Structure formats: structure tokens, C-alpha cells
Length: 239
Image 1 (cartoon, rainbow, N blue to C red):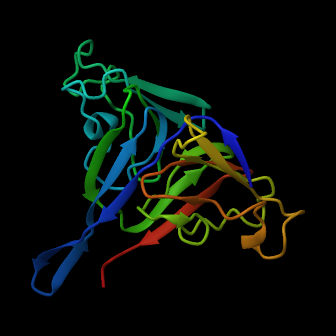
Image 2 (image 1 turned 45 degrees about the vertical axis):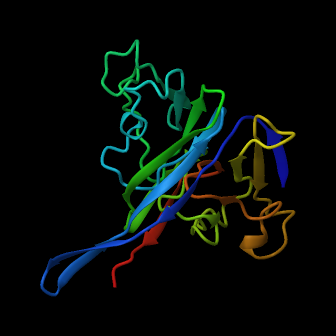
Image 3 (image 1 turned 60 degrees about the vertical axis):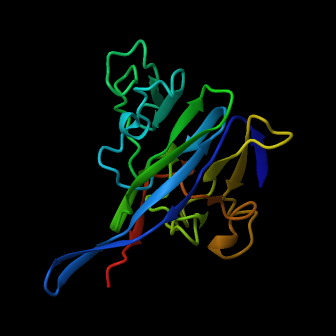
């Protein structure tokens, strides 16, 4: 495992559940929850792993009151290797949600963005919505992908989150998890994990040059893939 310095932040979340009875002997259960994010000054790689309705920056970070003035969001497009960018600007923007680009950048479950907090202190936000159920797919392109777990899980990306189909054609796969700023690392740092089939020990969970990568609820990460794959995560609370 290696550590590279850059810029960062995280999040944490807790979930509640609610039941909805449709009719006699026919029912569905939706997991309704919330994710609390603490956005440190500077860059934060974040995700919204709930279905909130629009799942857009303008809906999740409404800047009509100027809370996010000067803040910026960046969403990476692996197909073009470019970023879509938007700026919080309640005074200069003509849009009701206070973003110069109308806040249309999406934060769907499985996606991640950079959020640059322009304030000198932490910003605390709460996302409220339903937990995605069924089979949730995340498309991972060859090269760099800014992604997150499509369901609000935390822990080992391989064991807890089920991203296992990178193996066995994965030599050189890299994962960069951006960690919160800390004393000695005021701008944050990456924890980097590398698949090294030649140097690793036997068994695919031991192929990482270092421990399996881990992430928290509401946290995005970079996955540098050696081939296109689909990350399928199945979750259901229905009986």
C-alpha cells in the first residue's frame, strides 16, 4: 500500500426503515434513510447513495440562500477524460437553485464527484432518500473511473461491497481512496491499493499489494481498471 498526497474529505451515514402496505397480502418495504456529510474546506470526494428524486447538485445542494457560494463541483467523464464543472453563485446566477450551470450535474447512486468547499470552515449536509434495491449496476470503463458503492455500504470494497469481477484479468488495477484531512495532511491524502498478481500471495483477495481497499458511506473513490467491467451489487430488504 502507498500513500499519495492531494486534497480530500468524507462522510458518514445512518439508515432507517419504513414499511408501505399496498393492499391485503401484497406489500413492499422501502428502506428510507439519510447520509450526513461533513465537507472540509477544500476538495472532498463524495457520493449520494440514496434515491432522492432528482439526485442533482442543484437539488442536493440548493444554493438559493448563498450557502454554497464559491463552491465548485467536478464530475469526471471516463469517456472523454474531462470534467463537467459547476459553480455555486446565488448572486450571479439566474437560476433558482443558485448554481451557474443550473446544478444539473448528477449524483446518482454509484457515481461520485469532487466538491470543493470554498468556505473556511466545515459544511455539513444531509441527504434523505430511499436505499436502492434489487440489482444495481455500475459501469466501469477502461482507465480511471470516479465511482462509489451504489448502496450505502461501508468497509472492504471487495468483501463487503462485492466488487470481485475485476479478477483474474486485473493485473495493474489500482484504487485510490481519498481520506479526510488530518494533522500533518491538511489537504488530505490518497490510500492507494494495487493488484499485483506476480508479487501477491495466492488467492484473489490476497492479490492486492497491500490490504483490500475500503470506503465509507457517502465516499467516492477512483478505480483505475485494466478492462471494462460491470460492478453488480444486489440488495433487498423484502422478505
